[in-house]
Structures are given as C-alpha cells and as structure tokens.
Length: 314
Image (cartoon, rainbow, N blue to C red; front, top):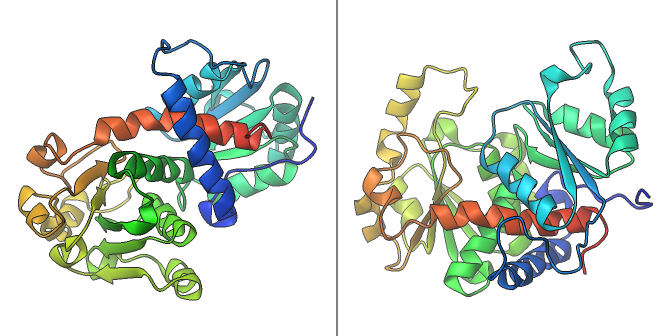
C-alpha cells in the first residue's frame, strides 16, 4: 500500500528543522539498540518489512550504495539496484514520467544518485512514492545529515554549540553543509580560494537566512577556533577542469597537521571520502580523524531517513 502523503528527501533547506532533528534522535536510538546485532540482523519490529527501495546510480558510488543496502535490509525491507544504462530511460527513449510510473508500481521508495538536479525534480513530479537524493550536483543531504549525527556523537553536545570549519572546494557537500548550518544554527567558517567560493545563488540564500556563515580566502583563518574541520576532494569524479592547475590553486588549503595548532585542542577531522591530495596522510590517519566512524554512521542515519520518507518515523 502506497503512502497518501509522500515525504521526499531532496535538499536539507526544504525540510523542517524539527524533522531533521527527529531523524537524528531516531538514528541515535537505533544505533544504540544494534550493539549486539550482526550486520544483516533486522531491527526489532521489522519496521519496513515487505518494503522495496529501488536505487538508481548515474554516478559511481561506494558508501552510498552499500549504506542504503544495509539500511533497508536492517529495517526488514529489500532493495533493487539499477544503473541508468540498464533502463529504457534515455537509452530507449522512455520518458521520466513513464519510468516514474513503473518505479511507483514496483517499489515503495526511490533513491537516485545523479549528475542532473533537474532529473530529481522531474522524477519527484511524477512519482507517487518518496524520492531520496543520494547525491546531485547541488546537494548531498544524506551525507551531511549523517555528518551532523557524527559530530554530535563525538562531541556529545548539540552542533549549535560548536564551531564548524570547511576547508576546500565549493561543491554539493558544502552546499548541504551550508543548508545544515542554517537549519541547525551553527557557526560555519569556509576556507577556499576566492575563485572557488560558493556561487551567487548560495550566497544570496545565506544572506537571506543567516549571518553566521563566514568565507575566508585563508585556511588558517577558517580553521581558527574550530571544533570540527571538514574537507572533500578538490577534484571530483566528473570535473572537467585542468586537474594539475586546480590542485595547485588549492595548495595553500591542503589539510596538514600544522593547521590544527590554530583550531581547538580537541578538534576533529571529517572527510566524506574518497580522499585525494587535499589532506595529508598524517591527518587522515591521525588521532584527529574520525572518517571511518563517519562512514559507518551513514547506515544508521539513512535508516531513519527511510523511516521518515516511508511515514514510519516515531
């Protein structure tokens, strides 16, 4: 039986802060309850028993693919994973509208990882089941909400009481972190070259909603007093740029051990992976780094996102 009121998970800025907080609270409870369970054992009550999540990947994926597979399995449901080149969509001329009808007939939820923001909105228009954004050019909401969970789990306090720093390129993860800063009311300092600052539409939205986000063209200033330093790859998978030139432009923004002398003593380092030249090996594998815990938490938070979208979140 399909939901009467469909809840999508596309962009953090479109989801009420109270709902985002409920998801994190539920994820915290579920993670605690799984301490003695094996990987594929189902949560008590099998809350999504009989439900099917259809996943489609137009971009390569490791953590998103595995974590959503485990998330729906641990909730008692099943998953089917598709690649866009396996469908009539695009290749065979089938429209998004018709594809959406088929997906809504066979599945209970749809997760899409795409290089086209418009495609997500087009699917949303025609689906009668929830759609979850597994990554798009302008947003990576499941990653960032999971990161909020990880920060609060390690720091043992609300993120609103912490200073968060992002050092690196302006990309979809940063756009979602900016949205999270507004939704969760935390200070966000961004360090990047002037040429690579967030776009005008992002800056305008920030100006309209919040004044607690700061942009510095200096890594040390951005890291000053930070409780958490985030970073991501400077060169993304499908970047059509001169890669050597771009890496050189970010040379002064590489995350090195010395940078942490300007942050708080217990500052942690997080990275959504995969990594590149933007972080030194000593930092990535050092005591400040919590990247593996961060990756694991994707499963727990995405379980609660699924429950939210399926109308089962308590």
